[in-house]
Length: 116
Image (cartoon, rainbow, N blue to C red):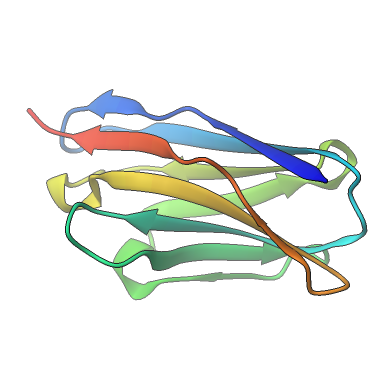
């Protein structure tokens, strides 16, 4: 079994920054990709960003230029640096890990609130 522990969420003013972390531990098979998703109240969960083991990245259009995803393969940890935060970025942010055998794990989520 794999455990994902997210951290770094909180309350921030518009225009501010936060850095989310997600550390994977346990019986980890080779990780293919690590993603961030988010879910706002009353809305469906949506893709935010992805990084593969090789370092390839892609982002949802609404975060391009503001968010940066990175990873530490040795630590099985993925990060999401969020800058220029907007009230509409308020959501629970989830980490998702996809192993090379296509097994998927989700974290428990961390709340990000952008408000003045």
